[in-house]
Image 1: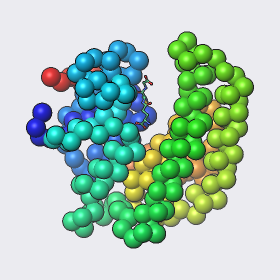
Image 2: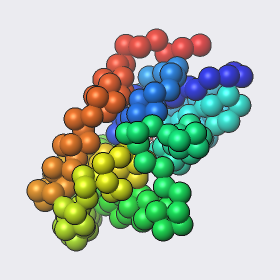
Image 3: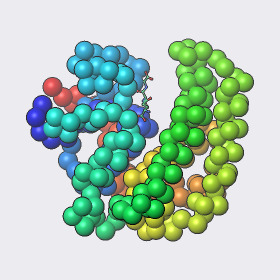
Length: 221
Ligand SMILES: N[C@@H](CCC(=O)N[C@@H](CS)C(=O)NCC(=O)O)C(=O)O
């Protein structure tokens, strides 16, 4: 392919992050609704794009990128901000704002998503693939709850997003990861629930969520 944006990945929290960024930025894209664990990520064609055989994967012309956080940040950096940006979105510019965005993004992706939630997902909800590990699951859930509780006062001070009334890429990562936690039975403190609910009520989120779930969309060439 030589032009345009293509997003591979449906019915996936991590693909949803990318759908959401694309909708917030008002970008048109081709959607390849492949799902994990259906065999669709194992084809030669897809493996050539993402040897990790996971979703999501983004193609932008000749540029191919995996990792949901990297893709969301790439889209915001490539298509927002530079020209003044969308009034509804925030693009960190100062070293302090960029560092703050990194702090929330790494927290969401590392402390919550990778360290605890994906462990719960694999060993509690997909035991037939990854095996049962009840002690590790209980410990991960406790760890996740402790981390979320620790940031709840800071989330309560958001106005209402990390950088005020405009949504940033870091908000997309944080809100989706809070939702991931709740889905895997980690109770959200009130401020985190309110923050997630507000972000999830945005028209761009609702449109992105519908597209992420549209598995009947053509799978493309
Ligand atoms: N760190 C990656 C994780 C990607 C990932 O694990 N995706 C899941 C779907 S949400 C997947 O493709 N799982 C299939 C598998 O593990 O085989 C990201 O954030 O993009």
